[in-house]
Image 1 (cartoon, one colour):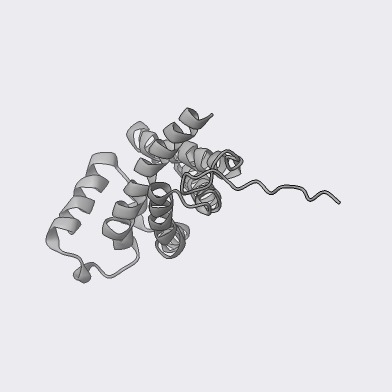
Image 2: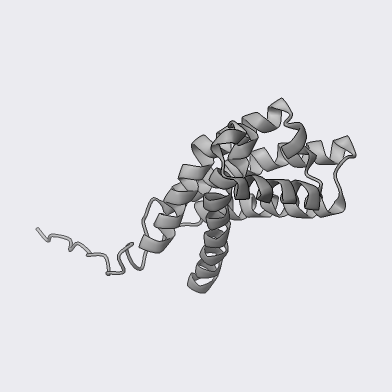
Length: 166
């Protein structure tokens, strides 16, 4: 079980890293004024929207802007905390994973249902968003896995108490 947990943590580390970098640089351009971003970030967003046909970034429907705000105010700080939790082996990492997984799964389900229902989404765009459903489920499962009883977060053996005899 330890090797599987380490593999899941490695996958989630990459996922949290993508969120930690992508949210403030690209997603925030959806709901913040464009004049505060440097030209290369505007060009990156423009390239992304044209390359993948992401009409949500260009049309900015209200539900999507709201989800981006939730991502910036809740998901982004949580992804940074989760990165630290993985690296430092913190006991609260499971809770952070569970919260981030539920947030990701809920937001992505709304986005994917819009993409499928609108008929505007290309196959390339769906291939970009659908894996986030899997990452959300994976984070939820990781958050629900029991904490190892063999060791504590810092790698030492727990102290076993002795029973007193009367």
